Length: 443
Image (cartoon, rainbow, N blue to C red):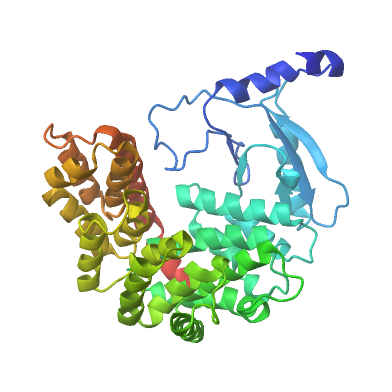
């Protein structure tokens, strides 16, 4: 109220919808001749939350950065207390489009909303992603975030997101925030499509993006590196491992073996430890898994133990997976607070591993409940992770039916169960929706 009194602007009417309504809006730009829409953004996509108030509306101040324009354009206030300026914004968008220019809404990401562009608009925006171009790192991060969020939820095709970032492999500069956002989204796609026949081509796509940055950033700290550079180095090494780059996997194994032989002389920096352990596992799973078990049991360093557990959980071999699941839940060697580090990998690294974790949980429910249910947070983690590792709608329905039985109460894990199954169903819908389009894009 005080801000309104001083400024003479309708601050209260603009602020109230943002504080009283759940969520935030997605500004969906229309194809030619249609109206702009601003529904609540739903991670599960349009219509995924049947309890959503379709009448919800937020006053949205929209600004724009336009190709070759020095000044930020706008603002236009959508759903404003004194009128709606959507038509004026659409008129400007038509003008920019007719002149062949790209435009990016929400300059500097200063307002709290996402934007879903049309496929043609995303295509033009791909030329704006160079770090030497007009857009700041914040704006490019925002485009990546909005694109993958819209694609993930089904408001646009995820192919638009892949097209947006396909030329990142040509960039000379790797800004921490931008590449972290990119990597988190691409890693999620790798998990989603890991069993598809086109997955090797997706890995090849990743290698084209990350190879140049891997050569530039290298394995070892350089004079002048800050903490973010070390974290970025870890991310790039990890993504090259996901991409199945043989040279990087081999080098990671070499460094792992040197570390095992003499941990003090060949120490691995803490910010690279998990990435190197995990990438080495891809090169020689049997040796690395066995060695990590010994390291975990002998080390007194919590960071080393945590990295070892996380990576041991990433095994793909069925026998080692069963061994690690038993070790994690039943041996007593893994502390309660550390179980989730291993179980996350065991449940989510392979489709079969996810099913094995669920089958074990279902078959041994009474024993597991007796051991862990009193630990509310841990019990919730176990339920959430084992359910999240499922893949199909049928498997999600089976899990839901299992917990609906009074003999199998989720108890404190109910919320984690709901979140896990929502994720399974969302991913199943994504696979059905985008599988063919992604396959065609990678050809």
